[in-house]
Image (cartoon, rainbow, N blue to C red; front, side):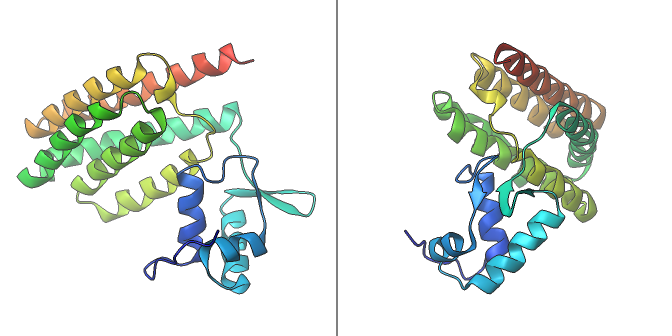
Length: 213
């Protein structure tokens, strides 16, 4: 079924968003004609978007078909290493530069997300919004750009660590601690809390993967 095209988004953004929200998961085959029909655009911009996504390693070849890429263990570890350092820096800068209104928004997000503890997929989407808000609160456009690239690759993970038993509640407590440090204008504590938060998430993911081997 075709979706109503968002006039503010091009084919690239539409496909990327569909991958990000899980409409197309790692291993899913992407077909030009089907994408054009879904998004209500012609095949030419779809083809150009697919080429761009392949260049960025978000898509890969399976014979003549393009499929959503997946991350192996080494790639996942590398991604978390980069993400942890960049997000730690974002938290540090947010503690220095975030407006009072931005801090209130972060607090409100943590409280609102408690209603999603029984829905890991919805909580995962809310988690991405929370982290994005910290990126923006850093008030550093170049850092935000780099973190956008990292988070695009995070969409290539087939599962969310928030689905693990008890992880959602723990993650929200960690979010609250990060926000408090930002509100206290304590950059060192904010950076440390965010890095620890991501380290724990990575550890949970590794344990879940080990159980499924």
